[in-house]
Image (cartoon, rainbow, N blue to C red; front, side, top):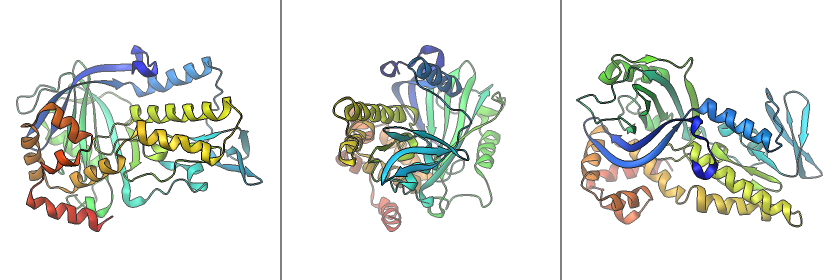
Amino acid sequence: MASFGIPDDVVMHVTESVVLESPNEHLIQDQPGFVLDFEAFKKFLVEHGCHKSAEYRFDARVRDPIVEDGDLVGVRYNSDQEVFGEIIIDATGPAAPLAKDLGIANLERENHAIGIECLFEGVDLNHPDFADLTDAMMLRLDHKYAPGGYSWIFHTGDDTAKVGICYIQNERYQENAIHGRTVDGYLEHWLDNDPRFENARQIAESPVRGSAHIQPPGSMSTDSFMAIGDTVLSVDPVWGEGIYKCMKSARAAAMTADRCLTRAKDTSAEEMEVYDDLWKEQVAPRQDRRLMIAKLLYLAPNERYDRLMRDLNKLSRDTLSAINDGSKREIAKLLYPCDLSYFWKYWRGT
């Protein structure tokens, strides 16, 4: 966070470890992290932007791009309002109204994932039947609570935690789903059945909802235009890391804009493509491989998750890091003949 100048007062809690859970097993790894107060974080961004002479227009919903003589020159928002600029950036998330109109985004419904998160107090973070989640971020692979996805508990201090689930909606990943159960229903089911929530009470006024598309991005820029953050799927497809990845995406866009505007001005598609290169190198290296890992994970049954956790516990930290980075050699060591059926499901659907 320090590399982005994020102040301490928007950090709810500093965590020291990451816990991966399956229905009956778990893995604990030392890994520092930060849980942000997202509302405070957004307020900081606005205040910091104003201090740097940025202008904000609230209650403004982008409608479509303004193109004159074949050149992108601005955007329309609300009913008939317009704003113009040398470079236009779409940071609207999966809605991507500008990127879609310009032919940059091709977000497919079958790759759409939805999520919900609430803040609770009274969470038992050190329940005897589970790993100690004090000062930890926990991610759980368990189709009972998040079919075709995962659930999480992020400690936010004392007995409070952010609790949420997300999953891919299409039928192939919903084979273990309960017909008619919504994302809210799955969260409620987890809260009702996990003893860590026996005395938990929701303390945020309303849940935070989000969505993303688990698919590779195509182009991310064109003449005078860049798409950043979740508009181009910057969220990590394996473990859902979002804010940090999106900030890295924004930084890459800022570097590109600075390059295009501070020398002889050139916002051609060729020059803007520097952003695509930076994104692939710095924001989401090996993204295609990580997408494959994620989709294979979500196709596997619960008993395979337990076996995976047992295998991961036998590995060194360096090997685990290599697996997380997408090393084919190390990933192959975790595979068994029975996994061929998951590969078949994956390749059949690509």
